Length: 189
Image 1: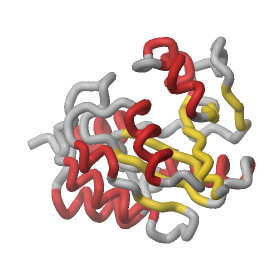
Image 2: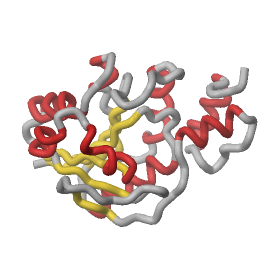
Image 3: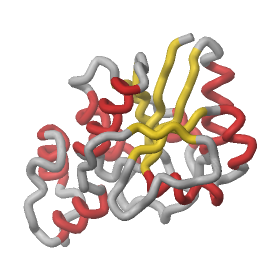
């Protein structure tokens, strides 16, 4: 069985915190690959104001230098709101020779009781939880915790800083930073 970690999200924009978490979990759990799965419209957030194609392009730029990082567009192809349960079911059917685990931050660990059909999902996949500032890794659901140094960077912080014309250098991979500047994403227009 090929062991694959999944990191899902809006990646609006993808930042060094995403990459740090993925790499640290990959090493700690001895995973062969990490699949980044951008959502089209996440069920727990409002629609992204940045087009899915821009988020996909930025994510591609962010991960292309790591041979263990792959892009999977299953949720973008589905369009609309995606639930982790339907994504995992589709992936398990398509890749029956893969063992998947789903990487989530402590904010999502706390939110697990609200996930769509969580009791069914927990039977299909293992969750790996990582620390995040302001949240605890406590839940009644079985999760594996990976202890990594925390990097306090969030996509919302980056969007806000760009909107307020503050620097985001060293928070993003350079190609993503250049893409945002070239296409004037998140700016106060």
